[in-house]
Length: 105
Image 1 (cartoon, helix red, strand yellow):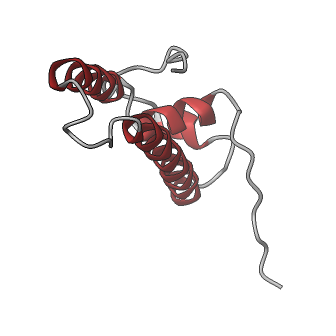
Image 2 (cartoon, one colour):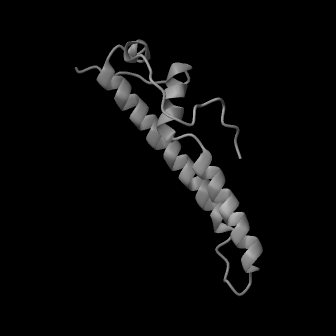
């Protein structure tokens, strides 16, 4: 399980002008953040599915208490992770998102 990387777990107020400064346009900034948040959410979903797939055995084969408790712990861990949008905003602020503008011809 990856380290949270100092991403806040709650929403904080940000200066929109400062957030949009690297991109130069509010709407493009929001679109970039949304696309990256979707990518992060998809990655987390795949990772969680792989971990929970281990518990997809027949109920007769698995000890109910042990396996169920492990599933609960894994689910709680993923619930406590920062939201994908917050991670995407942090990546944009840190300059870790690379994007390019398509110029009309």
